[in-house]
Length: 608
Image 1 (cartoon, rainbow, N blue to C red):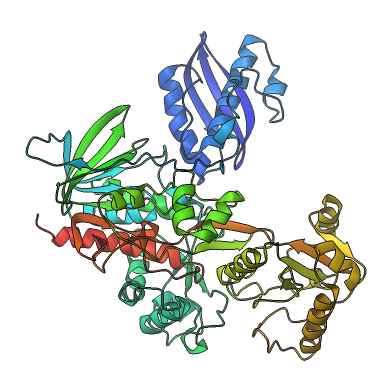
Image 2 (image 1 turned 30 degrees about the vertical axis):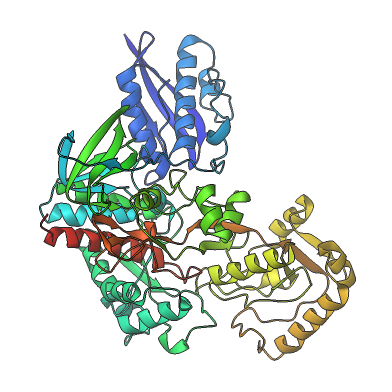
């Protein structure tokens, strides 16, 4: 006779409650209540099927949703503990109750800290030589490596055109780091921009000029112009799939760019929960694209890393990939081409140290929040095949405590950043990654941290990251320090008192006029007076900039800029379309969707 029991455990997105049906000691059915539209929800959905198939809860965690996997397992364990008399029903439904059957190693190593990084965790090996005797286990027109936004856009475009598509996904769930994003996209001249903002004369040419200026002469202008030109088309393409664009706002200014090219261009879609544009809303985009790709006939295989390319001995042509699927090595033919879309070097210390000092520093401080499966696989695959790399050196960084300057809807509160010499060094309300690049540079040059200084009036201002209550708690914890005088403040942060006094005097003198002639700040300009508060600047990293060299058709180029036939790259696996810092929210998703589609469009026209 079947009986039902319940257990609850705390997951990444909140509590997970499992309802377990037992036939004796065997689980015949299990369902879970979990926050819908989340990475954890995707992982738990797969786990439900795995547990039902196994008849017990001790199944492998889902890569990419590790925390929720362990929480689901704990909830199931607690439910079964009620049946065995090891817990009461009340104890099992209390999320604080320990899992009575927790495996000894369930919370050790990387499962406990998703930022634990090996020096080179990528499984990629050198290409497998192609010859007439190579036997492929399966054959498709297009192989897409990675199922983040770029990979799913490519798969959807190719499959809707009638091509056969295989998606190799390393994690146990789709979406990659795109899931964790806000899903917002920049585009100029759209019907939504005209209807929802005052920028009714904006156009892709202005947008491209803005991005090129922000790129500080370190971007491929052809790639940037192509992205700006096609971004509005991609907004409409997604709308046709059911994405509902609801608002448009702007990123914060960049001092080095012309105000004539600035506009509100960040498009936000409805997340189905009464909002949009928040971290985690990217899952709406990836699920929309996944459904479209699968409906069009694409095939996706989870827990299937691509470990090598199949390449001719002259290193000129790619014929397919080597994947590891269900514990077996399989060769998959790509009759038209392989599209690499595995994000950047986000969790790869070896590549970061060699190519990207700012990202390497962030990894050393465990500041990266990208999917743990982003280990630079696509970039390694390309490099092993002879590809060049381009645009390495920047990151998508923001102030981890305050989220300062993430968009122009929220002004920066009155505060200043000072370096180890007690001097101001940047425009504090410039777009977040511009400011954080300056923070990184100052900290490297002087070998000491930078700090944010504010006062009691600051927390009353619009855009404040603190309330009186949260500030008091942070002071008590030591995360924020308080000083009654400039001299005390200088001692707290170990900077020369005379320099700090001069910095504050200069700031206050100009702030009384509402101007910042030194760095051209636009918001949060107000005097700072004792008592002072200070917080050490902390970076939050959402990904590395730079990747494989590509042309405007998405083809991967070798070190001599010649195309490697049959090999393509898109999104953050590709380099050269972002400059030395991230130019503003919505740029990455715009580029990811566009380049995924563009590579697929090239393959649609291709005849091998």
